[in-house]
Length: 113
Image 1: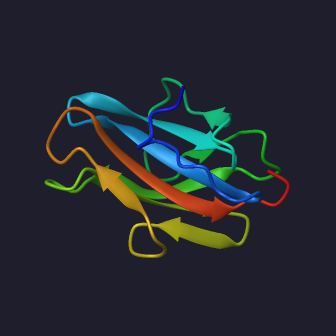
Image 2 (image 1 turned 90 degrees about the vertical axis):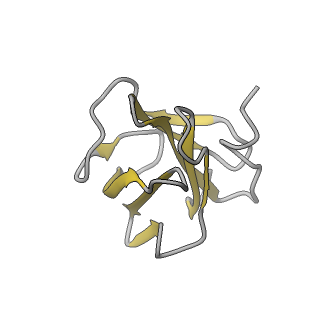
């Protein structure tokens, strides 16, 4: 079962980009489809701006910014297709504050998923 902070079911055609980790733990990326099924994951890869996440989607998800915001958890921006999403661009949700279990979630359009 998926942690409710990591994925909230969406309407068909809306996917979610999720980053989890902590200041002393590596950041991991996971992509979810509208029904919270995993469609992509970074595994143990080093996540930095410029990282491209391959998945079941037709295009890569490209990280443009990722980091820790201090008291608010992880913040990130990413591109998919012709759009940019996440912190400062579209709605997002961060959790964890200064704990070792921080996260970030933002929805983006993914027709057919």
